Image (cartoon, rainbow, N blue to C red):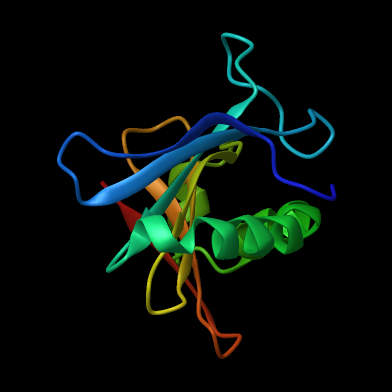
Length: 132
């Protein structure tokens, strides 16, 4: 993927605190939603979010080929006991957040009301949590 093609162009959220957009991903990388929608939500958080759209586009280009491995990382590092509670959970990437401090958060839906969140830090560290 040489360029990011925004399906929904970057725009400020209604609250004016996040730049939001969406991209379409190949079903080989991420299956579409149950309704067939291939869009993935992308959010840019923090100061001057609108000035970081090009930077985010470059980060997305680098991140997309890694998505299958990152999903496996999220599953393997999930909180203790999580998979016993959801033994048949399939992770579906619901969105990606880019933060001004360099953190990238991948939000995975697993069929519950909560999300499994893989947080990537600029130093290479990864954290996984369950969030409402």
